[in-house]
Amino acid sequence: MTHSETSTVPNAKRLLWAGFAAILAAGVGFGIRGAIFSTWESVFKFTALEVGLIGGAGFTGFCFSIMIGGVVVDKIGYGKLVIAAFLFHVISALIAVAIPDTMDSKTAFALLWTSTFIFSMANGTLEAVANPLVATIFPHARAHYLNILHASWPLGMVLGGLAATFFGGSLEWSWRNQLILFLAPTAVYGLMFLGQKFPRSEASEKGFTLGEMLKDVGMLGAAVIGLFVGLFVKDGLGPLLNGFTGNAFFVGSSWTYLSLAIGIITWGLISNLSGWVMGAWLLFVLLLTHALIGAVELGTDGWIQNITGNILTPQQGTYLFIFTSMIMFGLRFCAHFIEKRIGLSPVGLLLLCSILACLGLNMVSAITAFGGAFGALAVYAVGKTFFWPTMLAIASDRFPRTGAVAISIMGGIGMMSAGLIGTAGLGYAKDRFAAESLPQELHSQYLGTKTSKWLFFKEVTTVDANKTAEIKKTIDTRLKELEKAGDKNAPKNAIASLSPEERRAHEADVNGSRLTLKADSFIPAIMAAVFLCLLLYFKTVGGYKVLHIGEDQAAK
Image (cartoon, helix red, strand yellow):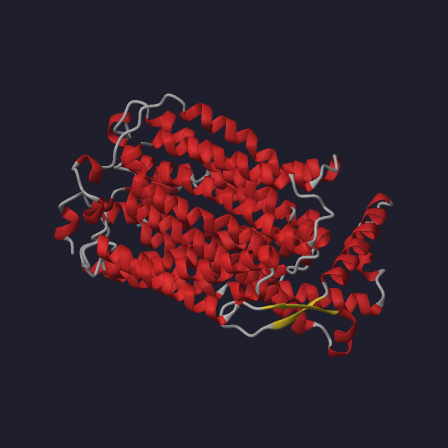
């Protein structure tokens, strides 16, 4: 393709790579945070659910900022949103630096949650700029260029994982110093966006009002938004306020009813803005499916190196995380080739990816050795590679009159789901399966006083985090000694050096990780069924094609 065929503005490539650098900063921060989850568990004695809630805040703040940003971006301009994102990133870093290791668990939880939430607000604001910007300047190859844009996410995770390995391992930097390394790419994207001229979306150019842009969202789409806003108030904001105040009201039944009311009010406000129209059923299905994508892709990414590191060793878990991220980075430059040369439509590509992701997660749950883990993680990595950007491309292709609004709402729902369903749900699953795998005769010795409760699932008493941390420290110390002595079977022999009770407790913890991944695999299985139905639907209407304003109405 020539430049004139693929882009609509002269500075298109500069804007593309500025957006690339912005999402790179988010990926670096995400990769480092994933590597220090286990550190937070040990230092602050968090349960896996608490760590999952903190990790989840790395997504939920994204939801609000990308939705608000998507609504106002054409009104206030891209430049102002970039400045806001830069400030959010700096404030997030300052809060994290101020947290000492001696801080009590409740206060540390509240501050880490706040820091992570603000960090995700910065990321959401940047995607409210980058996604509609790239979709606008490359209207004839959206899937291709949105995949290139989002290749920066896995690259950022690679750099973040390498930074955590080098600075946290070889140089023994504190987790605080590691965490703020994302400020380096933050400075880069600020400079790249500086002084650039930005285009406007097709809908904005034609003078569409916000209400007209929301017609395809309608009451159906508003219901999805209201659901996740209510969940955020209940399961995100509630535990935070409880952590700050110690008031049980924020985690009780009255707070649940208040959360439900806020979700209904949100639905009513958005429905009213859309003129109380029903909305497009296809966009409704895409929004729900993207919620599943957020849970299985980003939610799993937030836990995967912790889980594989638990099954194998923490260092091997980080290496595998870097490996899968490199696969994603490389493959996201190939979306155009797959679509044009192989002949897969965006929906067909997503169906294939869902099948691979389901298979890959089941394979990862069965790993026993570092070498074999590479094959399992490769299948999972290929499966998850094209989910996020291809879904954004489909929404932009099929609903052009929504402008930046639809893809911003879609991105926000995906991130909210990652935080409230993905990371928190996997944290709860890890707590529950580890406790259920612990032999009955060890309950009095290894079960703690904390409990884990998520959504409508039963409350469980968790394994004592102090005991788990002690076992992991013993394994790590012994592992280093054996590796230094040249033992080729150091990981197995380090575990063998534990007492019989410690080995059984460790095995229960590892089994909890395996069962968590198996439970996670049901999400892409559901997605595969949805994409198969959509593929059949498009065959009945003449195939998948890109629509423009006017054509989208005729296609309904």
